[in-house]
Amino acid sequence: MSDGLQPQMGQSLLFLTDEQLRKGIEAMFFAYRGFTADPDRILAEKSYGRAHHRAIHFIHRSPGTTVNNLLSILGVTKQSLNRVLRTLIEDGLVASTVGRQDKRERHLHLTPSGAALERALSDAQRDRMRAAYRAAGPAAVAGFRQVLEAMMDEETRHHYEAMKDRAE
Amino acid sequence: MSDGLQPQMGQSLLFLTDEQLRKGIEAMFFAYRGFTADPDRILAEKSYGRAHHRAIHFIHRSPGTTVNNLLSILGVTKQSLNRVLRTLIEDGLVASTVGRQDKRERHLHLTPSGAALERALSDAQRDRMRAAYRAAGPAAVAGFRQVLEAMMDEETRHHYEAMKDRAE
DNA sequence: CACAATACGTCAGCTTTGTTGACATTCCAA
DNA sequence: TTGGAATGTCAACAAAGCTGACGTATTGTG
Image (cartoon, rainbow over all chains, first blue to last red):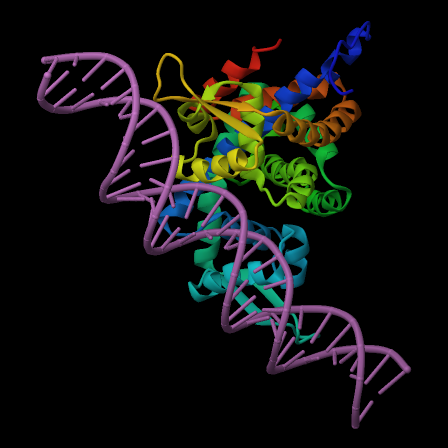
């Protein structure tokens, strides 16, 4: 069915064997651990989690965004996001302001201390990414991004594309 | 400090700008969601979670592995793994046998129904991976793997390498 | 042999982060 | 103007991680 002999395939299709795909799956699993390891250490000190990191990241990326918009980017329920957001607001890292046009909306911004944490997390994560990029070289990086983009859900890719070309 | 003007860098270093790195970070985040989406759907039906998937994956990959070995691959505590393993054994998906040489060890294998679930999960995940690989092409795939490997922790990479060359 | 170390399992309790359900507020359109 | 849709909050629960403590069987060592 899925595995098997894979007889006389063209040399060019060898990268599509189940074994190659399995290696890719494992690489993805192990790499994601490294990807989150450094920010996780910083977050643990402040007793925050990855959910806080994600919220901070995307608020930084899209200042003034609404809760609803953040929700669809993060792909979680509003209740789940709300808990995280509440602690960030209480701790003075995020400012929530009532919308001027639509008063139901809350617009989210990082405060100076929120921006400072964002910077610390971002720096830690980028350091590792930079080392990996440097080790692999520009051609590999292009391929890396290509495969990742092809792996996203349709809807997710829209979010990604929308943000991609913000500060080109 | 980390961002800034980045003046007159060689063309060859443009892929290391903070903006490029940020895109890579977001690509990683969004792609990982796609990466887990299909198995998650299957798991939800059977009220299992990703933790079960990971255990099943690596037991399939290293049949007869011990609890301790699985622990160090997965990077979780034994209490956490035990909870998952117990349900898998109760449900008849995993068999745990006392070691022949060292009777303290338990060797883990997938039962036929465990192997069937592994196959279903694996097929779903590979389908997406295959589509992404095919869309990106062999050169991109090579780069993808290179960057991921460079992103791993030192210790994690050992686990990865050890498994990589099993069924080459 | 006695005893420390190892491998595994389990109990209790806590945290983070996801979920659903219920509800208040605000806006808009019939 | 009023009822429904949209936005956001509170409460309660579940999955899956964690620490700490302890029991048991087995192994290896002084």
